[in-house]
Length: 289
Ligand SMILES: Nc1nc2c(ncn2[C@@H]2O[C@H](COP(=O)(O)OP(=O)(O)OP(=O)(O)O)[C@@H](O)[C@H]2O)c(=O)[nH]1
Ligand SMILES: [Mg+2]
Image (cartoon, rainbow, N blue to C red; front, side, top):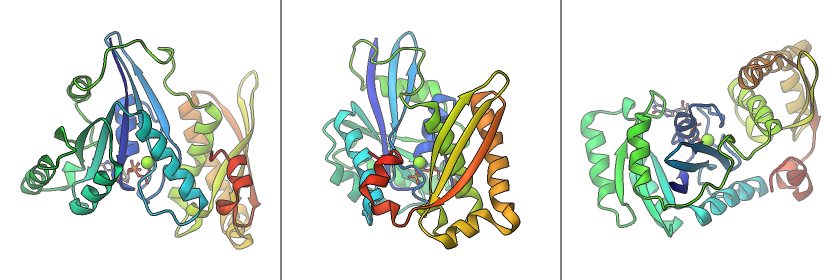
């Protein structure tokens, strides 16, 4: 059988997480219209009789400005190390030269496929032009065009990938779909709501940590901390008479229940940890290794 690591790279917002979810048929990675949503390497394991593909979603490639960014880029680098195939994702409406510069700098050791995404939002002529632009690049083995959000032709897409993967034995148990714990996905779903409901810098200065995840007879009891950098941010997260935290709680609970397919009791606390994004100790505690 064919086995291998297929790792997704690209600028923030290119649609990497949307593509991972489309390939997995399962929401493993949170998505938002804001940049820098993904902060970790997220593996999605797809096992069939003829193959096991381990996909990795990665944070968008950026210039690091603080330690959290450095951790995010380390997730990108670890994914560069073990990739059997790189999927270089391009938003068709982005600056192609910038994407090209980023991809060239990756110095991928293995094959790379350019995946031009968001073709639902561009003209035929523009898509054709993008294909022409990237086909000429030396690090590119193939160029494909998709709309990750509208739904991809998964079978056809995977058949393209299989051509580039080696034969071997599965790395992971065929029942597993990821190597990350349920606690991680739970915290991410809460973070997704913060990206959705809060403006400006707040989502970027926030992280979420699940402290209690207890399976009771009829429901799962979850307690989580929302960490912010400043008291003023805590006030915004709580909202007037607690209205915002209530909304975050209700919406997060619904999405966690959808993910776990079980009833959930969710309790949220907001904590202030000044400059946590630049503090090794805090970063470690909050799961940024
Ligand atoms: N029109 C259109 N929008 C898309 C498509 N794929 C993704 N998007 C949107 O693009 C935005 C970013 O998607 P993500 O999947 O979060 O992008 P990402 O590359 O993972 O972003 P980071 O994690 O920040 O690096 C979201 O609003 C998506 O709904 C697509 O095929 N067409
Ligand atoms: Mg993402």
